[in-house]
Length: 230
Image (cartoon, rainbow, N blue to C red; front, side, top):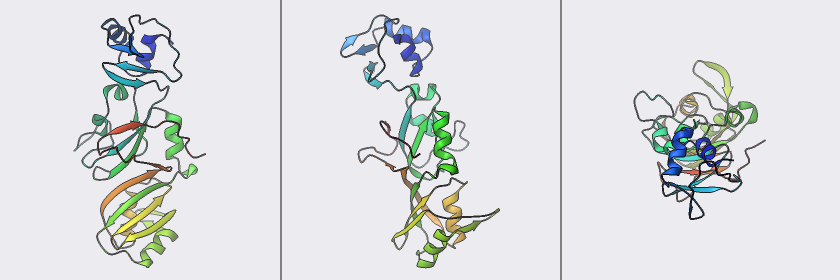
């Protein structure tokens, strides 16, 4: 693939802008400054250095963001900054979007991609992709609440019961809840249905992906070699 097309596909701007980056000696490969925007390069395993920063080629981007509180999962936020502001411009330019949403006050694992088929696969309830939440509860959690969450509860304004795929009481006020659906404010509404209240909410797993130990809140990383659940 031509170098200018590679840069364009990765979100670095129009083809003219990408060619200008090459002519300005801003793109390197294996320590060599690339001077010809029409140079053909194999994309398999390709890592360019663009403006001094490494950029691995991805035909479709899939990134993991350790979402902090105070950000909305929206392209057009209403009250708080968008999580998109935490990503570099090339990812924003190529149209990545959150796979599902986390509330402004919810923290933790958020996946983003521009791959529409992957978004559908990971958000469709038909595929039962597990998502694990660490829930800080206002009131002590008892065995009856755990049993009801596992059996299924009816949410306000929704007559169809929803249940947790797994539910573990970690401490008196800490519940680990696994869901395979993604209804609006589902965790908060499920806890309200068993007469409790969510004080803090953190997503720790998505389809068995976890947040790398060295990834601080507000930071992101590429997801490589991960096969989503069938």
